Image 1 (cartoon, rainbow, N blue to C red):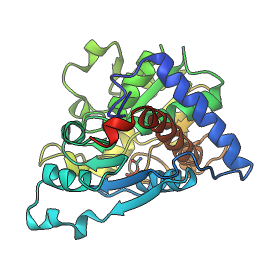
Image 2: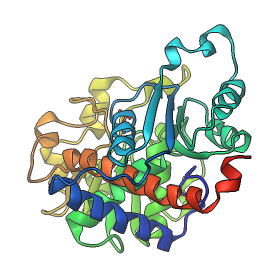
Image 3: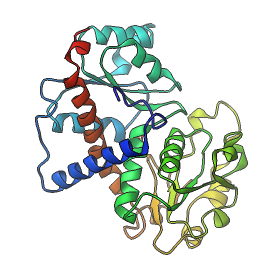
Image 4: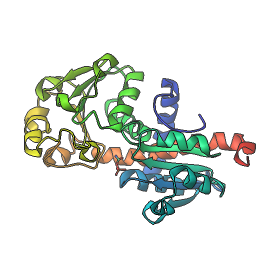
Length: 312
Ligand code: CP
């Protein structure tokens, strides 16, 4: 692949290759062998048009650990504020010959559009409600390490499915790897026609979590609700927030995941989030750096194999 724009175009064997490589980066990092010169001489620009803690910092760390020259564009201080369009901004940066753009944007499809206009590799760091591929890959690596496999697991994705690019990318990936997926949450926060996707849909947490191996909680994405239905946080927590009572319906060794940022007391009880026997939320963050190193490593191999395209 030239870019990493989503999970949709990836085959199961490509996902496995990337996860295997990411696993090696986890081992190296834990041995404090964090640095290499694999991306030496390559320029990585991070363009985040939406706030981020985990994704932006881990892409920056990943690039630096692989030896790239990493630039974080401050979009708040850029000429976007003076009315310059996304495409003009991309063309301007393209003229400076970057090798890799990492882009997050609030509009679904914006990163695909940008990728068509530039000569370098592009990684989607989250576009609107569409995709967040590296999040799904880091979630997959976390599950595979915790459960010893990434197939034939019962996985519940819970909460605000309709507005979540994390849910969409995870659904695509976990489906490709032949898992059984349940979506659990209020009917008002389920995308129309989702049951045609080969998933089971529940609006009741107790039923939805029964005997699952993995419980993946999602944030209520109020910023994407466009004045539509916004549930009261109290009512939402009571019915769909993960607490010990609801988690007791999952398998005794079920793991608890959350992509962050978390709203404690809204979609998850803080005690569950911090329970190191159940929660793998900190492992997800650790896997984020390794997966992003693996993604950039694989894209860089393609870049090096196509020097003429870089100078086009
Ligand atoms: N999970 C995730 O994308 O977090 P950030 O918004 O902090 O990057």
